[in-house]
Image (cartoon, rainbow, N blue to C red; front, side, top):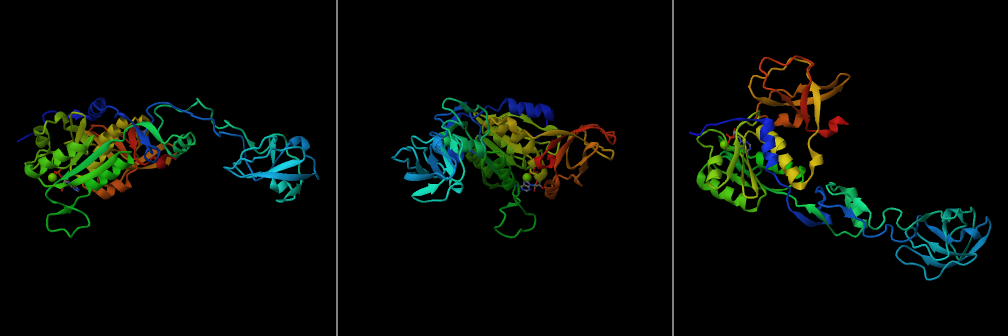
Length: 409
Ligand code: AMP
Ligand code: MG
């Protein structure tokens, strides 16, 4: 029988994971696929933006020196967006122009149509425009050669917009990690396929873990639920190893006779970094590497699987993509009641948060059983309750990892 040889502390486990996680190679990824990735080098402006002087309004391009209330102008051409005028603007002349149209030669301002008698072959000026009014100058947004986004920037929609204005069709980013999830357990049934027979449950972990990985910016897919025998498990893990940067299994990693994940991984040449963390929920967590691939054997209890994902796998995925700015915020909380930790290991307690004059009040979401999936939907944070067994007095400051950042707003 296999037993835990040596349990390590949570900070040590986190350190070992991050220390062995390199950034993924740099790749040019097309603009449509870069959301959530991080720039691997500074991005420079390839062109002045806007590239030419253009109109900010619909109206007439004129010479400001000619402008006088009541003066009638002759319209000699037009300059819609995308079609520069052929004519230039002479004295007493105007060119009809629309937003984004190129400012024609001779003109130094645009008068809004609202400040004229209206559209026509001639118009009368109702209000005098200042020189330069309603004109957007070339390069006023960005100038060619400027660094517009520094290396490490996480790409959101504004960054996509800015890169597109510069004609970038692809961006140099740290490649998106590929994660494969394999759930293990003979009792597991694919949700939506049929009713449960006695002893069976639906496989919730693999769907949850894929969803969590996508939230963290990874490309994730689930394999299938493998049953608890080596003949099924081994080819499944081999298949996962084939394509993944990160393999995540759920279940079968503790000390039971049917817990074959760790031994199968070791048989497949995985090097164990650690197995067993002084931590709740998730004591049996396994972490190993094979070549460039990282493998996490998460416990099967759904809460343990999700909390271990959040505390260990998510930071690793972030690290791979270079998104160091996306670690979960940590805050100090307090409890109104005395908190007891009978487990003798760090307890990441699921809590709700409430802002009070004294700071953040934490309240347990209720029973902390590792099978209580509904408790996850109620948790705003994980309060890190140290291994103290004799109780933490009310009001004592405690560190918490915020899961729902919107709570802090
Ligand atoms: P294990 O870690 O394999 O001993 O599983 C611990 C508990 O988690 C058992 O009650 C399993 O039935 C349950 N479990 C394991 N895998 C899953 C899964 N993919 N989805 C939901 N529950 C699971
Ligand atoms: Mg199992």
